[in-house]
Image 1 (cartoon, rainbow, N blue to C red):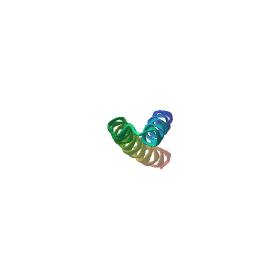
Image 2: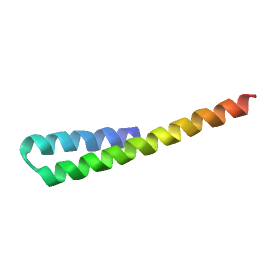
Image 3: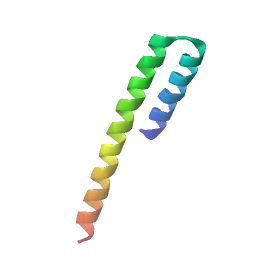
Image 4: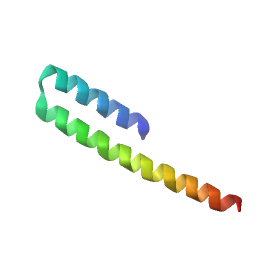
Length: 54
C-alpha cells in the first residue's frame, strides 16, 4: 500500500510541474488517503503484535 502512495505522490508532482492542477490535486488527495490508511494499518499491526507476545 505504501508503494501505491508513492506512485500517486510521484504522479501528483509530475502533473503539478506540467501544469495539470486538477489531476495533481486528485492524485495528491489519493496519496494522502492511502498514506493515512497505511499508517492506521501499521499501528494496528504493531498493537496486535505487542498483544500477541504477552
